Image (tube, rainbow, N blue to C red; front, side, top):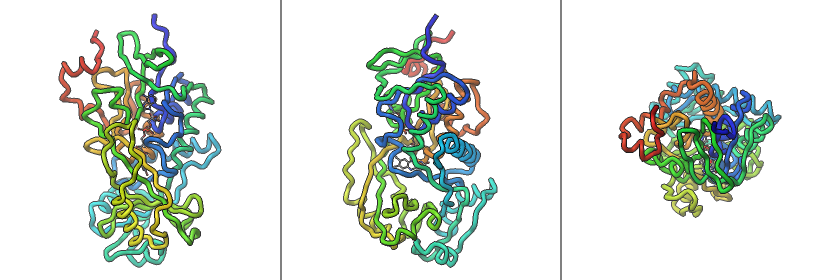
Length: 394
Ligand SMILES: Cc1cc2nc3c(=O)[nH]c(=O)nc-3n(C[C@H](O)[C@H](O)[C@H](O)COP(=O)(O)OP(=O)(O)OC[C@H]3O[C@@H](n4cnc5c(N)ncnc54)[C@H](O)[C@@H]3O)c2cc1C
């Protein structure tokens, strides 16, 4: 008889791992997590002080049920920990009338009856003078949007899971995952842990731990930038909603000021590929600073176009920019959550629910068909499966 260390192991207690552990612990399922740094660190997916929470979803209206589930769960985690984690400031989606961007946002709004307003150029100019409007600009104001505090949210989700009985091993780097007939093994410097089920939520390190995932996954570097303002009262969260803006050839996002002195505004596009996540280059190229400064000067003139802080982070991207969430095709004892492609933070509580559903009852009611890992691995050959460590079928 194999002695298991818990019902579920979780490799990587970052964004998805912490929220998965919280969901498991709330159900009374025993879980042991492994984190190479500590929950709430800012060295990979979850750094940089704030994350957009958008409901009128540019990436597809089929995400809206997941987003509404996430919203309820973020509010619950906030209530359980006494910290107001999700700030619903509203979200301004500004672009050109008839653009693919605003069409996609509008589709989500119509199909899911999202509380919103449509602002024409005059309304935009009057209500949000912080934005320098450009000819042709219009906006949706999505009342179900706002922002989250990523490092705080991850740290609190993990500690709330621990309070409910979960175990988190900090500074515990998993060297290898091995699948044997008896157990899924997690090898650390300390010892070998054994579980009947494993969740792998290792972010940009996923492909190192599960080489079969490699073809789906590339690591992209994303740079965040902060600018000073001389009029901080114009950028507080009650008067300055989060925004995504595609105007004049620029594609940027912004958040209200959190510290009362700076405003975070960043380019939406990832900047370049990372060959090795353990050697992330934190040097920011001048060309990136030039582009974001020009965007700020042109579109948000109440902010001084001088970067006072820059942060470099990374996320795993898939070719279709949808994550892969579900059991591995070649060993369903392992559930993987990865490839969140620059927009996964807001979804983390729903992904935690999904992972907890999959490892406990084998299915979920949440709509995750578009996230099936098998959409990439359907053509994996029998020889590949052996190479990736599939256990013998009985
Ligand atoms: C700069 C930036 C801005 C973004 N903006 C938004 C936004 O506004 N809204 C939004 O919704 N999303 C946004 N995203 C995306 C979102 O933050 C990510 O999709 C999400 O954080 C990824 O979560 P994850 O759990 O996959 O990775 P992570 O949070 O990085 O977690 C993976 C964890 O696994 C650990 N780990 C890895 N390997 C091992 C190992 N061998 N042993 C032990 N531990 C290990 C890592 O240390 C890490 O803690 C943004 C991403 C970035 C980078």
